[in-house]
Length: 305
Image (tube, rainbow, N blue to C red; front, side, top):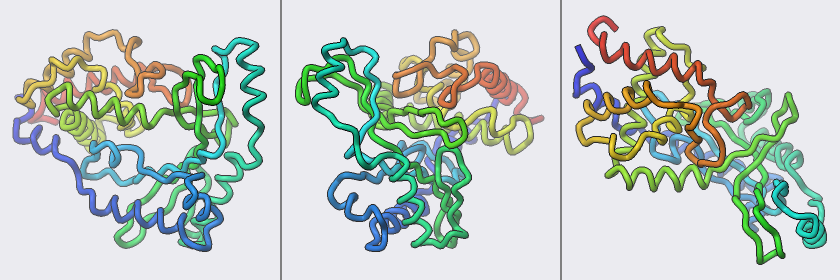
C-alpha cells in the first residue's frame, strides 16, 4: 500500500519557526552586546551575522532542532587564485595586503562573546566547524559558524575590474583543512528552483526530509547516512517537470528518477562542486543509494513500516 496522500501533505508542511527566530535573535544579541569583542565590527559592517540552513531556506521540518547562524568576517578574505595569470597574481598582491585580523581571531572573539552572554557551561567549542550554544527555555540549540569571506577568481585586472564567485571559508579544527561553501548561491539557486517548479521545490524537500526522518525514527536508517543538507541538494537536481501539484505523483517521480539517475553528475545546490565525493563537504554515493532504497521500500511497504 503506498503512503497516503494525507501523510505526504503533512510531511510537506514547514515546521515551526517561532523558536528559531527567538534563537537567532538571542545569538545576535550576544554578539552585538556592548561586552562583545566584535560588537563594533558588526556595527561597522566588518562582520555580518545571518541565518543559514533549513530555517533560512524555509525547508525546516518539525523536529529540526539546530539553528545555523553564520558570523562572517567581510573585512578580510581567503581566495582561490588558481585561474589567474602571473601578471594578474602580481597585480593582486599589489592591490591587497595581508589582513591583521583573520579567521582565528574571529573564532576566538565569537567564543568570548558567547561565553560572556550565556556562560561557559552553555557554549560547546569541541566541534570541528561550529560553536554550539546549548538550548535553554524558549531557545533551540544553535550552531554558530565563524567564517571569512572567500573569493574564487576567474580574472583580475584591478580592484574594480575582476570576475569572481563569492563564498565563505573556515578551517576544520582537526584536519586544519580549508572548508569552502557558497551560502548566498545556495539560497538564490533555491529561490530560483522554487519559482521554476511552481513553488513545489521547498514542499518536496520537506516531504523527503520528513520521510527520511520517519525512517530514522523507526530504525531503518541511521541519521548520519542522510544529512538534511545533502537531501535538499539531491532534490535540487530533479528536473523541474517532475515536480507535480499532486504530492503522490511527485514522490513517485522523485524516487524513480533518482533510482535510475547517474548520481555522479549531481551538484550541490550552489552548483560550485559535485554533491558526491570524499571531502567534508560531499556526500557518499553509497549512503545516498541506501537512502533511496529505503524511500522506495517505505512507499511499497507503508502498512508494515
